Image 1: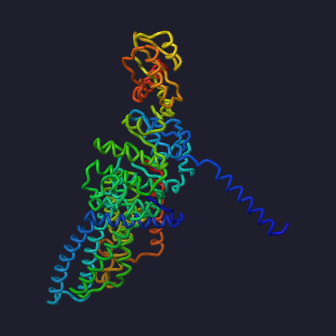
Image 2: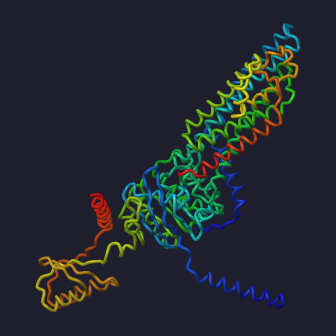
Image 3: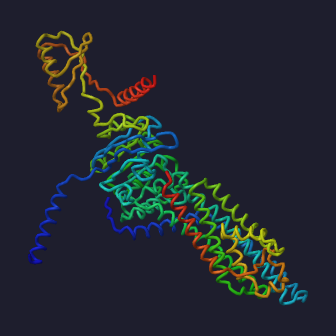
Amino acid sequence: MTSDLKAARNRTAQHEMAWLVAGLPAAPAVWCSGLRKRYGKRHAVEDVSLQVARGDVVGLLGPNGAGKTSVIKMLLGLVRPDAGEVMLLGRPATDPAARARVGYLPELFRYQPWLTAAEVLTLHVRLSGLEVPARDQRDCLALVGLADRAGDRVGGFSKGMQQRLGLAVALVTGPELVVLDEPTSALDPLGRVDVRDIVLALKSRGVAVLLNSHLIGEVERVCDRVVILDRGRVAASGTLTELLGQRELRLHLTGLSAPARARLAAVGTVEQTGDWYTVVLPPDDDGAAVPDLVTDLAALGARVHAVEPARITLEERLLGILRAGSAARSGAEQ
Amino acid sequence: MTAAVVSRPAAGTVRTVLTIAALTLREASRRRVLLALAALTVVLLALSTWGFSRLAANTGGSALTSGETRLTASILLNLVMFGYSLIAALGTAFLAGPTLAGETESGIALAVLARPIRRSAFLLGKWLGLVAFGAGFVVLAGLAQCLVVRATVDYWPPQPAAALGLLAFQTTVLLTLAVLLSTAISPMASGVVAVGLFGTTWVAGVVGGVGESLGNHSVARVGAVSRMLLPTDGLWRGAMHAFQDPTALMEFGGGGSEAFPFLSVAPLTAGYLVWAVVWVAMVWGLAATAFVRKDL
């Protein structure tokens, strides 16, 4: 075989490999398996596995001491797991370079009080090994509402302002994964809305977000998936639809004829309490099921007094899961 | 917002070390540590200028021989230099605590160490910044003091560069210890323990000197052992020897001079210098190991 032929074949093989790799889905933003951590005798985290897909917003929920912050710190290499593996953006987390495209707002947000807000951002840009133009850094401060405080020392900032700065630090390098640990704990209602808008903007740009928050309503609004931790274990996880079950509709109806009942039953399972009917909506409902049903029921002579969506809230579901866990534990102890 | 990856891992480590070292120096300057040290130095320089000028005025009246003047100048210079090394020791030990343990305690380190940097590079940067700060201080203040002595009593140490280098090295040894302590204990405790050990070693060195002058080997061993465990006192004695006039010991009366804390009977051996370097490397290695394994 001549060397030219060999080289040509090598090139073909490389080309095929490149196509093969290009065809593979991107590695998840976060992948961890079997994470465990013990502090003394206390098991803080026991066998936690979770995944955040690229561009997904995943909420981490659970009571105080459930191990949420410990899990986040293990993902970022701030706490050494006793066991388990972590991959960030396709690289093992033991390699610091895996964090090059990761932004992090810690639960305990403190920044060098002797630096100005702009200097803190510059420091983090330099440590990340990336080049971010000064204009982009200023834009980032403006995004979190600190444009006019860029030259002020962090030592004079209120807690809320420091948390806003922390958010800017997390975002300044244009990360592909953002980890926000209680990002609104020190913010006023306006600040919370800002954070929600920022998370939604990240989502629209395809940036993966791992969000740990006590504000369940917030999580419910922005997250695609939710992982519920309880006593260091994953108590439940899934998309909001999976966790909350199917949507239901409550109707107050009178004068219901047999054909109208049949029409109601055609939508899904029906439960009746007096004049109130609860019907399970189909999972693939595109929004037409409810208006169609109401139009048809009225045409069939039913009198429609009230139509209201019935959906179990994430809060109710979370409490249910945590109570079930605690009941199971006390049952096992007896 | 656009950002581009620009560096290779090795270049990244160097950049991290230099960035953190510069940050540590900026912290020292912005937290007014620099200002406080400068003020203390000016006070000490002014006091010693006054003292040395009085000495010069007295010798003018020929109460002292030229040999006695050199002896007195040597002793006083060593005494004032001890003051500077004490200031440097206190300054760096109490700076090392807050800058390392304080940052991990307050949470400042969380956001920084979540960046794509190695903890050992971060620690090296902190250490380098502290070394530059502490060593820079003793060298500058010491040099100013030598110039004051030269202007007032016309005495110039035989090996000023070696002496100032050893003072800087002594400061480095102590702050390396403070860095190790601050990876394990609270910021305040690490400063207290480091300065406490510094003082203890110095006292043990003096006790050892008394033992030597009395010919009591077991007491003399106290100084030798403490100088091995923490090389600050050994390096300090080397620095004193380089500051003092070679004839000063003879003038002092030879035999009993081991017991005197502000004169040194022997220069530093190369072996001891190597041991001090190894000691710093070992303690730094321990600090790095502890810091890399630390849960934040």
